[in-house]
Length: 113
Image 1 (cartoon, helix red, strand yellow):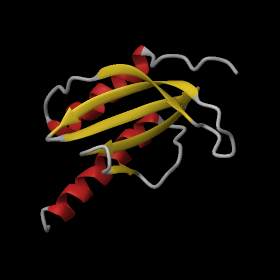
Image 2 (cartoon, rainbow, N blue to C red; image 1 turned 90 degrees about the vertical axis):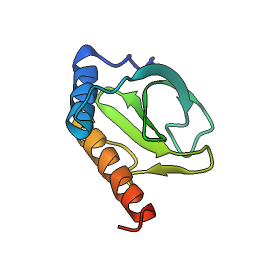
Image 3 (cartoon, one colour; image 1 turned 30 degrees about the vertical axis):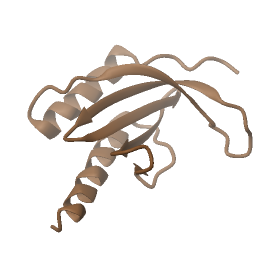
Image 4 (tube, rainbow, N blue to C red; image 1 turned 180 degrees about the vertical axis):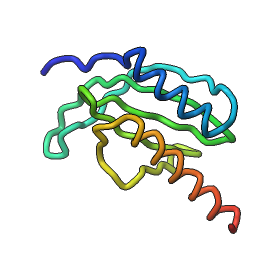
């Protein structure tokens, strides 16, 4: 299996621009690597690049799972992980916007709004 390429400058621009639009300020992101089971019918783990940021006590990750393939999650604690309900995106902008919207909706429900 071929290695998944790191996030490109263009992809990082999308991430930073989307975060700046959402929060009206620059948000620091970190790049890391993770191992994911990309095929639910296999136990094989694949190294994947990850973009990570934290805002307001919530942690966010976007996994790059292939060429123009992404997964997003947010969590407050390890046992409180949430996804968007969509397994994989072929558009990073859509992944980012949906991830941020689902988290904002979740936070509003917790606050009783």
